[in-house]
Structures are given as structure tokens and as C-alpha cells.
Length: 67
Image 1 (cartoon, rainbow, N blue to C red):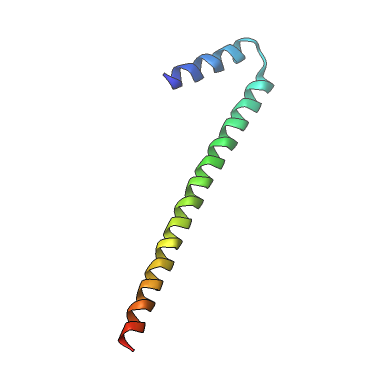
Image 2 (cartoon, rainbow, N blue to C red):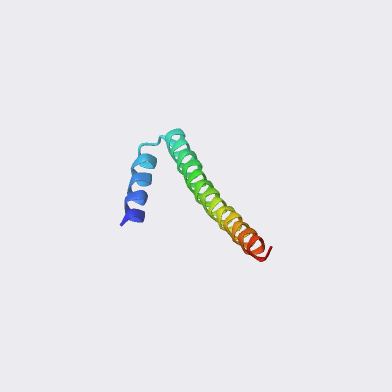
């Protein structure tokens, strides 16, 4: 599984005593995770805004028909 692979990789790096590389790897992994989360949230916000604009356009068409 993925967690097992990550644990094995972490143990391999730590066994070599190269803590700087481990710290860099952990920093890069967390930065990448944060970027992915941010992009997903941005995409969701864009979808919500698009839905809002679509509903406003629908209301505008409804009100134009009544004139």
C-alpha cells in the first residue's frame, strides 16, 4: 500500500542518517499536498460562482419574459 511505501522510504532515508534530505522530503510533500488542496478548493469555488452566475442569468430571463 502507499502508506507502507512511504514508511519504507522514510526508514531508508533515516537509516542513512541523512536528516536534511528527510526534512526536505517532508517539506516538499507537505507543500505539494497544500498546493493540491488549494487547487481543489479553487476549482470548487469557481464551480459555485459559475452556478451562481447561471442562476442570476436564469432569473434575468424570467423577469424579461414578464415585461
